[in-house]
Figure 1 (tube, rainbow, N blue to C red):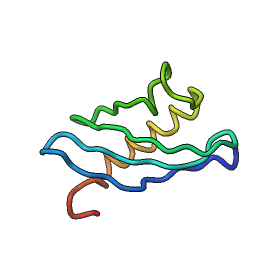
Figure 2: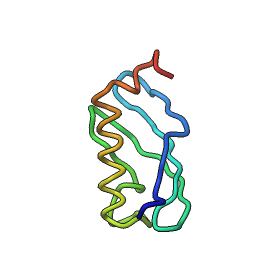
Figure 3: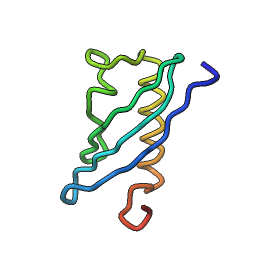
Figure 4: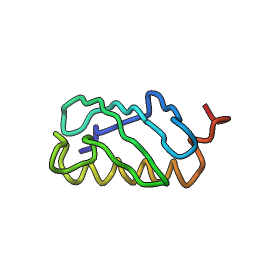
Length: 81
């Protein structure tokens, strides 16, 4: 949908390999908030799990791509916050 959007509210490192990211946004006219865990550049969490998420697969794929782009650009380095 044209009005779909999401953004990172906050993130925090737990150790050197585990990153928690809080997201908020709107998808298909519904507001959502959720957290994902990133370990060794792999993204996990109910928000992006098709079996547990309230979001459709297309939205999940877009959020995963958004996060992967942030990871590749080193957005989550401790000095970028």
